[in-house]
Structures are given as C-alpha cells and as structure tokens.
View 1 (cartoon, one colour):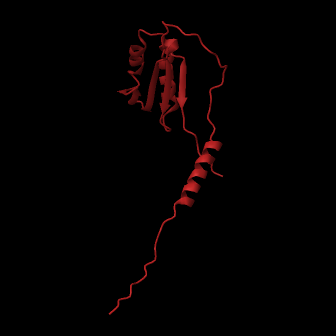
View 2 (tube, rainbow, N blue to C red; view 1 turned 90 degrees about the horizontal axis):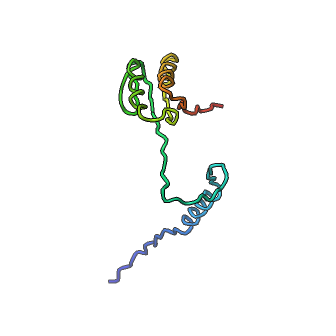
View 3 (tube, rainbow, N blue to C red; view 1 turned 30 degrees about the vertical axis):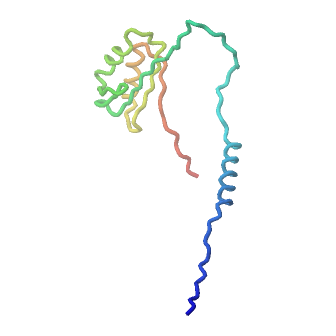
Length: 138
C-alpha cells in the first residue's frame, strides 16, 4: 500500500525588504540630523606642560517650600539657607560660582526672591533659573 505524502508549503521569511527599509531609515536620519556646534573662532591653541583645567563650581538649589530647600543634596529651610550658602562659598571666589535655582511651580514668589537674596548676600551674582518648556496647544 502506497501512502501519499502531503505536500507542506515551504514557509520562508524574506528579510531583504526589511533590511532595505532599515538601511534607508538609517541613511535618512544621518542626513537630516543636525549637530549643534558651539559658535566661535576655530583656534589652534599652543601646548603647555603646566596647563591646568579650571572647573567652575556650581550650586544647585531646589525650592519646594519654606521648610524644604535643598542645597545640592542637603535639606535645609529658609532660615538656614544663607548660612549654608556662606559655608559652601567660603574659601572660594563667589564671583566664579554659578548657582542654578529650581523652584516648584506653585512656590511663592517671595520665597524665590528670599533665596535669590541669600545668594546675592554671599556674593553669587551668576544665577540661572530652571524652567520647563510649555507644550503649545493648537
């Protein structure tokens, strides 16, 4: 007795179109991506054996409420923020220190001004305020 064999369809996955599309996407993103370069003059600086890197110190202040203010990662309050800033600034040039102030969206305006005053009383004039970009609804 002869058994008939069923013919099974041969299933293969052709990856060539997928590879083509991925390659086209990679080329597209490589061409359309813009890289920001810092503006300025391209200078070839001389070398020096005694050169030193100078890092600009930065203070990060996060204002949540009058009782919860963070100087870098140290928690403090409004009454003690000036003393903590004075302790961090001591021994260095306050004009060279950058401060970054970040406040909660609902923080009182007077609270932010009080922290700015504490920074300025300690000689820190270079203060940046962190905000987030609002989404434009059309």
